[in-house]
Amino acid sequence: QVQLVESGGGLVQPGGSLRLSCAASGFTFHYYIMKWFRQAPGKEREMVAGVTRDGGVKTYAESVKGRFTISRDNRRRTVNLQMNSLRLEDTAVYYCKAEDLGANNEYWGQGTQVTVSS
Image 1 (cartoon, rainbow, N blue to C red):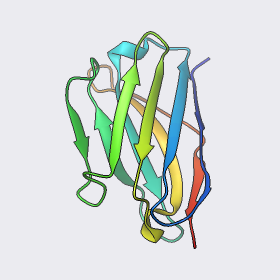
Image 2 (image 1 turned 90 degrees about the vertical axis):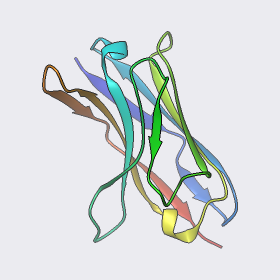
Image 3 (image 1 turned 135 degrees about the horizontal axis):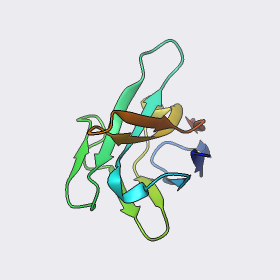
């Protein structure tokens, strides 16, 4: 069955760093665009980063540009989000998403909590 399993969340102080990972199984990983979303309490879910199938093109929300880096390893079937210089407003549940737009398929992970607090 299809699974996306996030890990690496936790509690970190402002200015600190975390690395999130998403392990994929049950589908042809390299056919899918991979994205990270986040959702803070009471707010809409927003996309924070995306990467194309071969890892060649990356996109970021303006609020995280220069601080977050998305990457993928198609052999290991993983996508990562390196988060540096974390701010209080980065606190959210972070979700991994796989998209195959041609087939109109999408899959979501269960989310991992990131809390930035002094």
